[in-house]
Image (cartoon, rainbow, N blue to C red; front, side, top):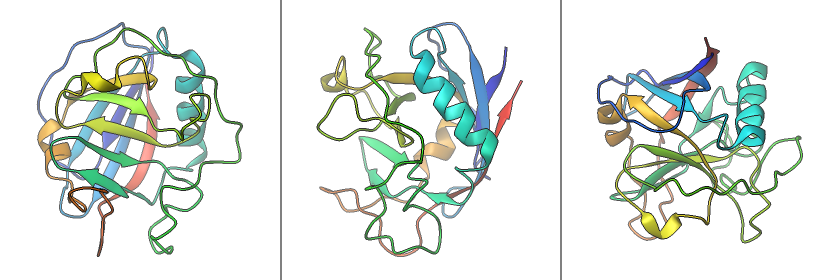
Length: 186
């Protein structure tokens, strides 16, 4: 079993529960939030999505990617490996994916509770690629609409410290928090 820990130069604590642990990542994050966030990936719930996240992390594709859309009381979104790298024109962040194909939806009955990690997508339910989001609070209106890929097991106080964006759009201006390094861990 691998463990996905999102180590973000962010402090860690907090524990969540969910489906069986499948994999994990470690993400070093810098910015207003600094510390480590650990995420268990649910390979049994969303095997294709978890496989894609692990492949991208293993290639270093997530290294240097910013949290480009952060809405207080809702979620923090990251993972645009095409247009979301630190130093790029942030006006395009959130519009890209990766060179890998988009994924068919793997919807489940898991509730979008605080700490749940989901895959971002466009209007097409089968368009998730590389971007993902972490819930700040419960969002059951997302249930059955977005693929759940995991859950934070420690470091929610780090997630809570991520720089917020515009109250409606979530667009982060200035210097956004960034995932400096993302590693797959066992």
